[in-house]
Amino acid sequence: MSAVTNPATVAECLRVGAGFSQGDRNWIVEQFATLDARLAAFHADATELEVSVKDRNARGQKVTLECWIAGRQKIVTTSTEEDLRAALNDARDDLRRRLNDAKTRQEPRHNKHVREIGQPDADAAPADLERVDAETV
Image 1 (cartoon, one colour):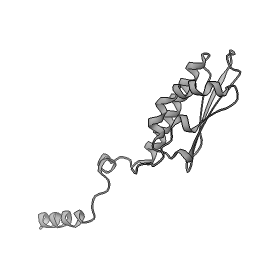
Image 2 (cartoon, helix red, strand yellow; image 1 turned 135 degrees about the horizontal axis):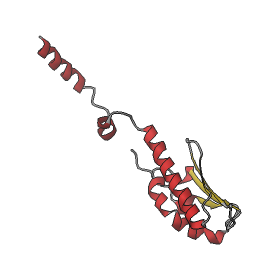
Image 3 (cartoon, one colour; image 1 turned 180 degrees about the horizontal axis):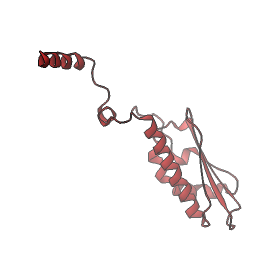
């Protein structure tokens, strides 16, 4: 995996949408700080986050967290928790799970050896074939 020169962070990529003010932004960035480790694999200029809330502090409030990463499908997470802090944390945790799932889908499957050390060298295959031929003779 190559290192990203300008890794994405919540503080750099987050926009506050409907239901939140710019004054709420710093508090939300603190709540979402655990996403920084997961977002660091992506370029900051290719990553956007937006959080919004509908009917804030009402019984049916709904928090929505959207994530756009260039070259990937948009991820949308929601929470209907009544407590605003709990709703933000719920949406954040769901986004982290979905980012992890998306990363897992892109890795090689059913071959732990390939995932950990990469593809074997082309030179190794002929040596193994010679050994198999020698054993069968």
